[in-house]
Each structure stands twice: as structure tokens, then as C-alpha cells.
Image 1: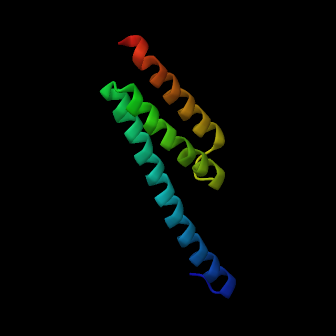
Image 2: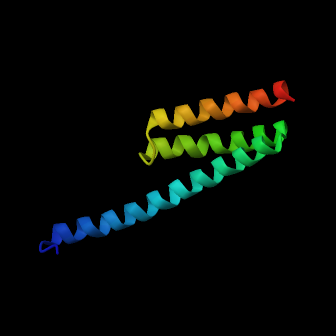
Length: 90
């Protein structure tokens, strides 16, 4: 267990940070799930709208360090390509 005041403070800060990051990650997953559901449903306009809402959320996760920049870029790129393919495959 932490003995110094600074170590106890660091533990408190880490607990807050973990809680915030967990909430951010959960929020990102929710937005991604909505995009996935729209793509699976085959509704291109709904998928585009969900994607438009998910983009800033993913970027924020990258900015805050919850997700790596390249991970976010990869996910956005793949989702965008799948949305563009909705009309072509139908």
C-alpha cells in the first residue's frame, strides 16, 4: 500500500483516469455498434448519419489517448469503405 502522500494522490488520480477512460471506450463502442447495425441493415443514409456522429467520438478517443491514432484511422477507413459499398452491392 502507498505510504507517501504523493503515492496516495497518484492512486486517486489513476482511479479517476481509469473510470474516465472506461466511459470513453464504452461510448466509442456504442457509436461503432450503431454504425455496424446501420451497415448490416443496408440503410445507407442511416449508416452515413451514424458514421458522421461516430467520427468525432473516435477522434476524441485518439486525442485523449484511449485509442491509438492509427487504430482510429483504420476503423474509420474501413467503416467508410463499407458504407460506400452498401449501394454498390445492392
